Image (cartoon, rainbow, N blue to C red):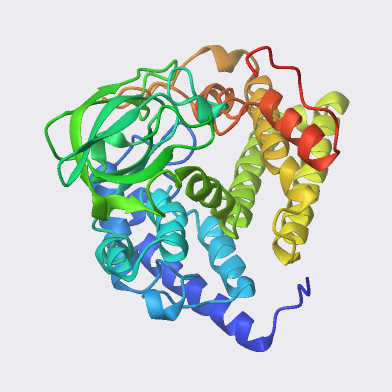
Length: 398
């Protein structure tokens, strides 16, 4: 990939930087830097207003094709936008599931009618989405899901449970994988549904975490309804759609994530300078290692984004690499704080989790990075079997 940005690209960077600076120094200053790992519950109304502000000014769907309401930006400018957003400490996006996962999936697998129905609300920031994949017995082994959808007249009735559903309590829609043919093989007979959350038959129960917050939820479907128009990609074709959606998750926005990691690392280093521990050889070695690994992460992502292969082998290490890196950063953050890591904030606010320091919040949240989205153990299996061609792990149920 040619990483030399043109003069026009740099002009676009200046435009994005100026807009973000003006917006985040003005009426949205309160959300700057909020909503990150362990802080997703914070300032919901303010961050939702930010989503709508982004949509009004054309800063959502920057990579979508123009014919579907996006700006049609190429990879270089998408990278610039996500980097500038992270550099400006833009708040954690409430709309990232809709914009980054649902929209590309609908564009690729949906019908014209479905694109017209779902994309405008995502683009405007007025409709928020959550993901109905994981279940108590189907996390990393997603194909083991048991939520079922049964034909009911001109639509479907859903029964089952999803878990670790981020921000379900605020979402208007949930995309749900459900089994529609229980006699089909494990990876077949699954359908991808768009399910409205504001209806009878859906119960949301928050999951209180060690951070004191509850951005994750259990979602129970007991007779919730979906129509044939809510099916993406065809009945019993949901596994293909689900895998396509996960591929979209590894897009240009990952570079913005890495710049957010850089902001977190810089904050930890600033704390080490302030308390004088940056001169300790063991601490300096850990900082240098994290810096080098973050650079490697960036270059590997750029390599993946520039390849023409459908599934480049380099992409297989992405989740394992960044999750392990982020967990290690959380460990350094609390080690850097020393004895103060055992005490909370003196200026704690009224919300759950407000008593945690930034270091404590980062440490506690990053313990989950190596579990959600496919645990480290599952990621290693994927690398071994798909990337290196090693024999499949023995499974007595097969």
